[in-house]
Length: 475
Ligand SMILES: Cc1cc2nc3c(=O)[nH]c(=O)nc-3n(C[C@H](O)[C@H](O)[C@H](O)COP(=O)(O)OP(=O)(O)OC[C@H]3O[C@@H](n4cnc5c(N)ncnc54)[C@H](O)[C@@H]3O)c2cc1C
Image 1 (cartoon, helix red, strand yellow):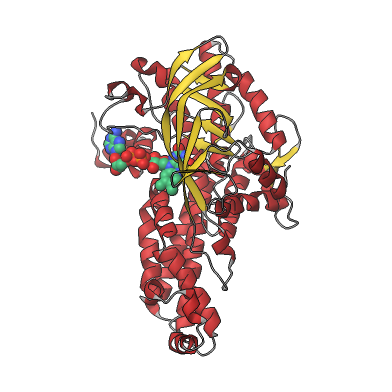
Image 2 (tube, rainbow, N blue to C red):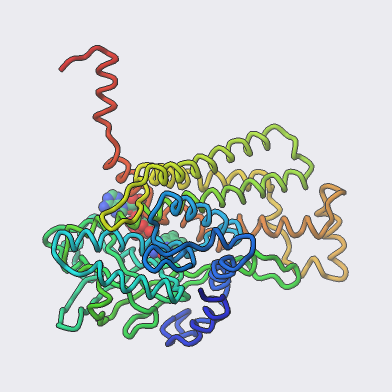
């Protein structure tokens, strides 16, 4: 397993192909470092005395100890541990731990490459096995490169005015394929090792050229990563762990990019496009059942601590909010546990979470995102949104005034009040918070996609039969 220092060294060695603000930048650009710092947690915890059991697993392929983020689940216990690790990781990062994107992608590939081979006599699963052994040995970070540009949302890929709106194969040779198109919103693209590309939707027989999946190093030739970084406002004096973390999301452009066959995991098998997209989405929505409870943990912590510091910790409306939020957090987490307990084995031996429980958990999380942050805003009052800049607190003349007038509870020091209110400001009114609140709604698919997944998997006819029996209706 790599150390976080080795990971950083590997990033520094990569060919620059990341663009920000119109410039080609290195992967250790200061704006990208906050995202890298979140990745470091995932390496450090695999060696941490208290957490290493949770953050490591035994590979079913090599029987070696690996970072759990590189693991393909082959038991209920694996799924439960993945979910628990993600909750722990997200608590440490203060928001998304991000690396589960790659975990869910390799889990999807492990399932669907085998199914394609079983149907078509292809050799994708064998390629996947070679790929995953190397991925695990090198302890790599994969970005999930799924969301296509998509163009007109009302039209299918083959109906688009521009066929490049979904990543597609434009040429096949004996050595490999050439792909063109762009994927949007790709988290970690600027600080991952590998870009793992999957289809984003179901595909018809007219859409074979869009049925493509492959994995390449992120600095591959003719790949451009147009990056956008976000992080809580940097601190000058009031250093805090949260303010060293952040994330990057990118538009990833494939400009007639050559992919050798040994890195291609689907090429033309349109009937598996939706299967691959959903296999990733189900695994990722199960991961959300770990990270969203952690976000609610932070929401509850902010509310309880703020109320205590403000002197209203015992008020009824605060306690009501906390009870409600505990219910939301643990119901999401319980849905993830149920998804693991009711999981099934795929033909390749991968343990696949139950789609209904993973989707209802993810849906509950998305529905409550803005309500939860609304409760924090309610308890925080207005000041965290309007408070003076950090430097003003240290101004020779004004600093003492600011400290005096921001005191609430005499038992809480001015510095701790400042720390809490600045953290509230980060979570409630920074551009970084805005990005992550949207991610909590759309990550893993927009809410309607969870609705569709639930409708496709749930047996409503069975419910009608229950009522018919109760009502004495005989058809
Ligand atoms: C911070 C962040 C990080 C992300 N990270 C990643 C990542 O790492 N990898 C990745 O692949 N993706 C990532 N995503 C993308 C995410 O998965 C998408 O945002 C999500 O799938 C929704 O797609 P979209 O943004 O194209 O929205 P759209 O699909 O444009 O949705 C907009 C609206 O149109 C509706 N709509 C769209 N199509 C239809 C239709 N056919 N029928 C009915 N209604 C429709 C939707 O329901 C929604 O209401 C990330 C997103 C965010 C915000």
